Image (cartoon, rainbow, N blue to C red; front, side):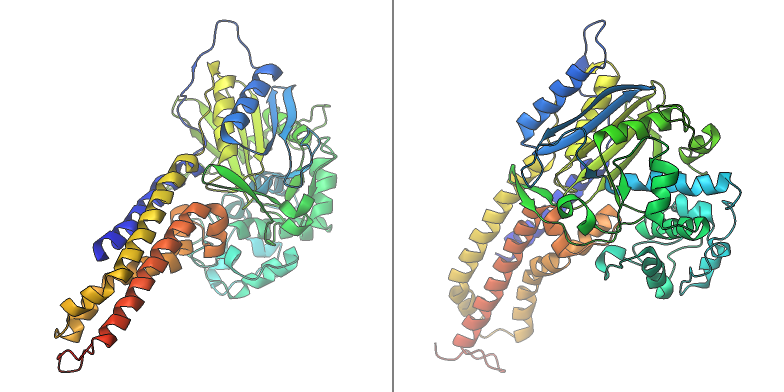
Length: 505
């Protein structure tokens, strides 16, 4: 029983390690087959692929925008929201961390206007930005946008703390936070970088952040249905969506998260098409209105030179995928929604996908994006199901095994205690010690998943991200705990004394 229960824990850890990678890797080698000669990226092919994907995976809903240069190939909604409303090209959906590129553009507009210098310290423009670590005075505006400020979830886990209500509160809450590294020394993805950047926009422009985004970024691009909100509770239906488990999906409400600047934009497929067009056309809207110079837009797509060479620019990652094609991309994840925005510089194709399934186990936006990238490159896309649709059944088998081993261990606890009657107490304790591992694994599961994703999280958040994993870990922990209790009771029953002489049963 000891070895078997420990094995369950090891199996779950392995499943986590294998499962996290597909969830964050959006651009991968093509797995499709070549299209027939003369086939092109068009609305029908987009619809066909998305509908096939939804049929095969049970995805409840998605919105998709595909552009090519200044041409809108397709904007559409598919399926329904968690409240049962049909999704359309004009349905507002949260795009989570796709918001960062929009915040970065707002900062860069101030830089173009000479109101901000990228390599000057943030405190020059935002004196209220104070941290416990004096090195915060060295953090530059550029380092906020490239996430090389030295701030990190390991030092300041923002999603596990009490959530602020305003950008001013969010910045003030960092007063007691340390830095994890010297500013400029390394890249670490951390939402508060963009909270501070958004507050900087607010203070320097003299206008509330949401208002500044609307007047300087969204409206000039024709994104009239797009807004920035301060929390998930202000999103449509409170950001209610779905989590995926055991091959099906369950509707769940989203807890309140502060979102302004880092992951608070709510938009539509039609407006996402306008955003993609401006990114591919060097800051010019579909109607010909310029919101930033081509040089500025290119800079937001260009990663700084760092020893790590992570490819992170300003709200965008830039890299080459398995096919050797250049990709500029960012994903966004809430507990109930996923989003991905992709630019293909070689073809000037833009792709944006938002799905109403949550992060990790519901990586549908990433999977849909892979197929649409294939389609844009002249390859017939194949439906690749989310990894959890396979992994969950492995976890289900482990869950059943853990429960069975737990029952077996409880039923055989009397025999186990009799065999150890008369032995030194410490030997018995050592035999029981491995049973603590599944319990420890359960209590630390949120931390472990956070480490694998480089983001601090809680067990409750992990239950959204991967329900089957939490059920499996819970079964292992409860089984081990039940065996420990049963064996303890049995030992008392058989009257082990200090001298090791067994008593009468």
